[in-house]
Length: 260
Image (cartoon, rainbow, N blue to C red; front, side, top):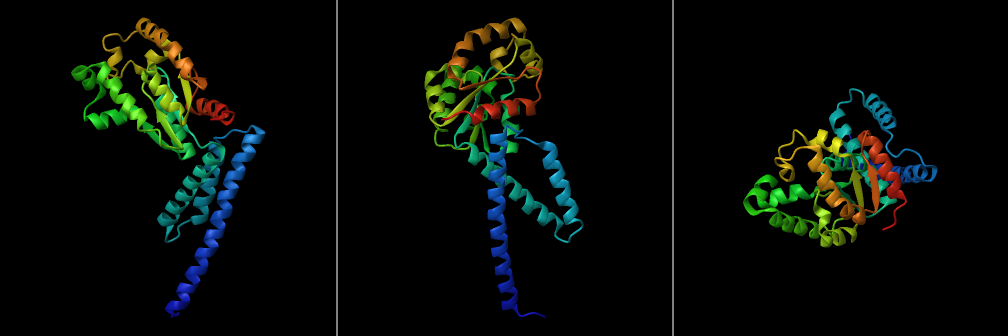
């Protein structure tokens, strides 16, 4: 059996080798994103990621530490995404728009693909008030809810590299827009009234549409908010007839040209 000190020395040397490789790998990850940006290539290359993952799994095979190795590489991949997103921008992405335009779906996709933090303003309010939004409206009224919303947005000013999904009426208050713009690029997602109705018709948690689940009411409310949305937006992305990857690719290309 080998001496314990000899084993520890080998372990230390191994750590230094791993550290050197990780430093190189992270720099390669940043370089890849820089090349994609300069050459106008797709940021989210799902098939390429899938092939790389399959190659890795085949290399690990039935190793005794299969699960541990897999978790390590998942962490490496996650941190590489963080490096890539930081190499492109250091601000937040605030998603605004009418309900049903895809804010939650887009937020989750960006979170997974860019390894950014994700915050849902409505979810913050629900957690703070210990009740669903519908109940807040019923018990305290819309003005109280909007105050909660403003406080939540104010508390997000110190966040960085975060995707902030805002409620449909968040930018009606100018103070919310000002606070978001301090650290965020504001992205407006749009969709037709017909698309929105199709997306939200089975959702009972939309108090604003309570008893008015129809195209005419949605169109009227959208018209009232249109100027608020467009005035607040740094970037506008239409979501009709597009899948989430297409939406995020378009959004991301616009983000690369945005200077906060």
